[in-house]
Image (cartoon, rainbow, N blue to C red; front, side, top):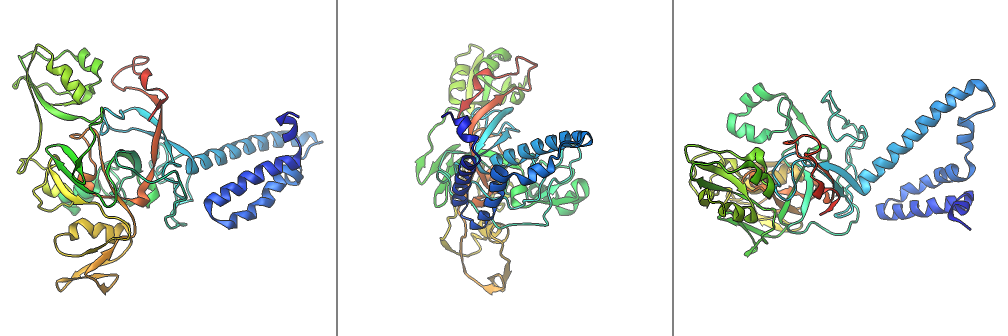
Length: 448
């Protein structure tokens, strides 16, 4: 007997969907969903509601039934796609060049939710297929009238070092209405709160699952100790593997002749990040991977190349107060740490030297009140000289090391902010070119 004929039997059809539904309930671990079995029985066996809804035999009901058919099909599609987005995978676009040349601006990804376990929606009252704002209007696409606590169901495993990870932007809880893509907290540190609100406000407050999504490489997981020395990443004393897409900027001096732009296109350099200074002459900050650097060094017009490495002190704002933990540390973006990454269940002693590291974790990410009083600390009104972390945390960095706002600028990424792992590039286009030259054919359907 063919499957089509077998599936045509209503009881067989009910058994098929009931088994899938029960497996989903087991995965969810929520037995209240067993109340949905009668609905499945009605939809697959009795179908009385459907028969009543699609009344026929009268000409005047024809138009109504056609409309109901379209509504039924659209509602089914919305439910199925929403189910897939929550539990299996979701589409994501690379919005910036922070991951060049690993993940490129204009890459469209399928992000696997199963990789780290699907996170249950915390803000379920939301318009389907949009993340946090409605198209064109810019208004919020969700309501916070109903909120749930963080819960993640079983997945393939946890976040590992060097994974590409999509996550909610940790500083995205407060958003400037006139500059929604910028970091509110960085603006406040630079300009002060009053000036920031006056020029870019008012602010919007977003729940965790409605913050903007970022993608970076996880360079350190909970319990690791991270150190960046002269641009090289070390975790627990071991240097990070040199992945082909990781790039830094180089001071490239030429004989007065600019490098042919066609060569940059050929070797994969993002031409929107190239700046030629005739006074040098050359390129003060040319972003290159190791392989690209080798090609550039071979050019007869190139006189010298030198990696740009920031050491303390530096004469611009990308250091100390602009880098996490936003106090005087002597760190730069190329010489950063050592820094221990908080882990769930670990207890630390609170002291003035580590409060800047952990205060946002205690207050914002883990929902406590924190107060400094009479030389001591109050957590939820209780005197405390220690704190035990409730979640694991991660440290993320972009592969485009000198053009990435990452954990060096906003600190740890909490476990409940993790969305998933990019798995496939299903489309890629370069905005620097017109159609069809803009299509990056070699990246289409690339497995990550």
